[in-house]
View (cartoon, rainbow, N blue to C red):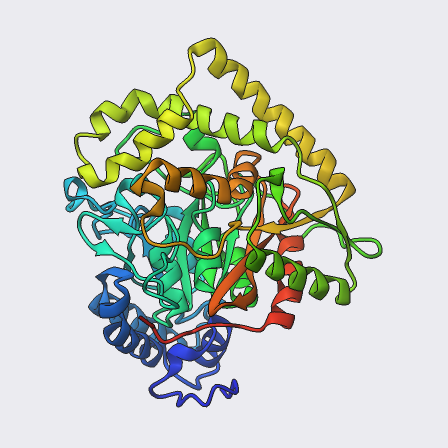
Length: 478
């Protein structure tokens, strides 16, 4: 199990990729229990500084690992993620473990069974080792700061946010606590932590992965059915691909999940990539532009045809419709929700609702049609350019809590994540991957494709990764 890291497999298994660990466990080179113990030791070492893992499931993880080892000893063939530890965002259910959403009101709210993506990863042999931090109810902003667990630090620089709202998983993966994290994304919440923490993240197409985002017995309203998706974070694109294959497919618990093939038809000839460095012409930082140029060069050298184009379809209209649909629905429940989250977490959502005022019913119904027309415009664009290369966030990693500190910070962050918001609204798949390290901080880019062509995103991201290299795990820094 030599990966060139110089790691002693007895103590530093945490440095290895999910693919390497699963192969070593299946081949009998190491036990699943040894893998688990190594990651638990790494969590004990660095989590006090990073504060990414909120509830450690150490004894349960050891039991799961020992059971896997017994199955292997009995001659059973294990899954493709056998023995691989992973974290789970605080709003995704692990059976028998409180799904707190970071707030005191839900500190004892434990589901009876695993949420569909947790069950899928378990079925592939992966082992959940703990929950991970997020903002209160995902509403407190982009920085993972919660009432129950405090705030999470970016392991690259404690003065920068790890991003959110799946920042706990991003920081845990980047610092070597786990090789895989499970978060969700409704406007960049997987991709931004990936970009800020120097790792890879997948936002799947609507309906690609089954999920269950209910709070209680009632299902969410339309925008919350159509936009948020669960997605994995990993240190390598190869590990992201393994998670993608394990998570995809229909499930009777989620009628939205569809039986679409994992891999589409192979492209005929070189694939065209549209580079949009500054979506909407609202500005992009030079460090992010440098990462995009490096990624474009990597793709060009890998045989892609990269062409810089002026813009993506109907960006301003998309971002406005995205905000208004979400906040129209959310305004109906805000009076109740505002009473159960801390005052410190209210400012972000209040500024968001002020920025995108709730619509009356006729306007809301019009927006549901606007969404379809925007999806059509994107389908036509991606028919000409099967891949889009663009920024995840048009600035380098920002300071913690900027988006909820004041209106100027809120506007700055909302503007910087505009391509994530637009592609979430259109239901498109995207993979975030590091494009460069500039000024000591990772700068992420994303590859976007047509619905259900995650395979194209993963292939292109792998080409970028081959040029840039794998940047993590890192030792947390102040």
